[in-house]
Length: 131
Image (cartoon, rainbow, N blue to C red; front, side, top):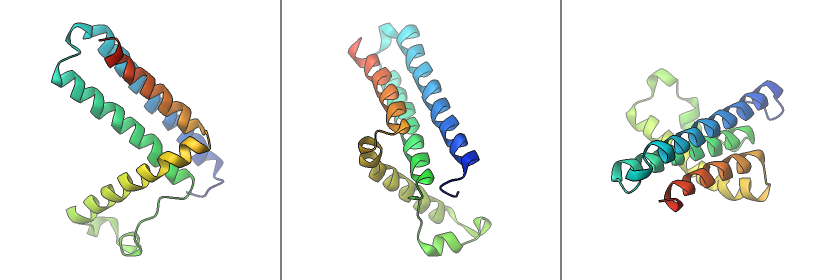
């Protein structure tokens, strides 16, 4: 995606919004329906997985938007249908690493992604602080 692609930018903003809205709704659902079972490992694990994945998606899209999503040349040149399980796994590891490296960027530029991540974190912490 080009950096100044307005349609791509709007799509990423929409994705950030929906990732956040669904995750906050999930956290609210957990708080309302399972408030007496918040110490359950299943509830805790599912909340951690859903919230972590939403934050990962927001950071990943922020990296893609800022042209920081770079793969090794040999992976970029490989046709999608020729990639094996190993190549897809390596892409996933690279995506996670890039997303982790985006955390300070998102924080220090006080971007919209940072706002969405704060909303997710606050609603996630609410699950455990209200226990």
